[in-house]
Image (tube, rainbow, N blue to C red; front, side, top):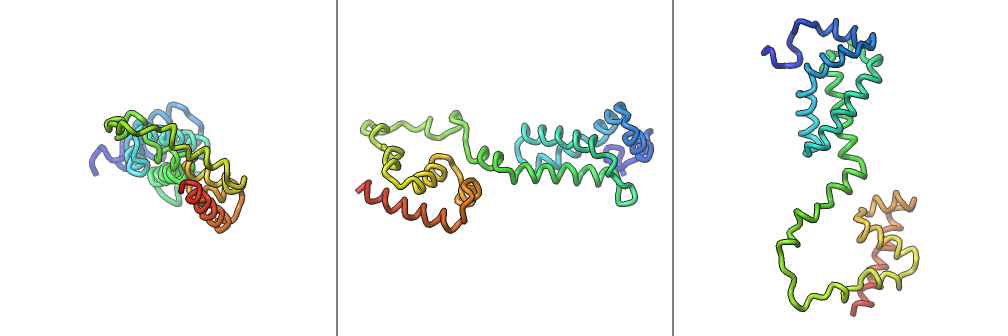
Length: 185
């Protein structure tokens, strides 16, 4: 093993590090960070794909590791394996979170292709009026269309948000689209 891998022996053995962490020795956490943080960050980054989110998840991981260190059982595996699983699970939780999914669908306006594309001279955004047309829908249909098209939710997320069956959301969305199609004609 090369000296750069987290599993390699150093002047502070893994057993001693584990004991110091169990004793809540804060200087041991500094050693832990020096030894494992870059490897954990790399795994987290591969999962979340964004550096700033990976940094946040790494920080959350370190706090969770510190706060739940008493649950680490050396007989079940090496320290690195345990902390890797904690970090990996937090990264997976992050990408499954609604906040992450909604945020990843939105593109900052500075990066939008729309900024680089000139509008046609006849384009009048105030004449679109789609949002005003939704006011003519039944309240339960309007609520669903607002969440789906203006809120960026998926049908499943709308069902969860409104505590409705997915089939009901789909039926109401389909009915609302038919009404809007008639209004546009």
